[in-house]
Length: 52
Image (cartoon, rainbow, N blue to C red; front, side, top):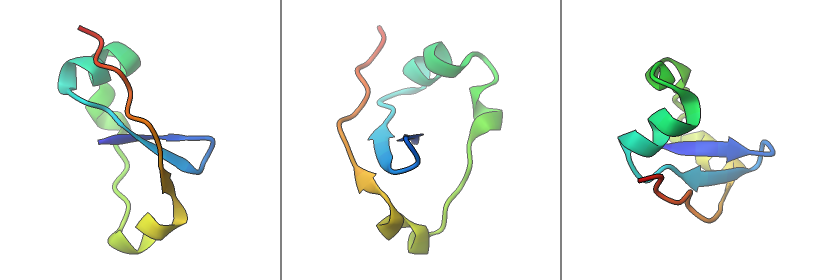
């Protein structure tokens, strides 16, 4: 899973615990699935650090 920063940069969320710390216990409901065709619209950036 990734976050989308500034509408352009994809940043990896390293694990479920970090996702929950960032977005709360209902983080799964916030997931948006993009198609493979959309992948070229974004730039991969630095991953988020694990919050453990």
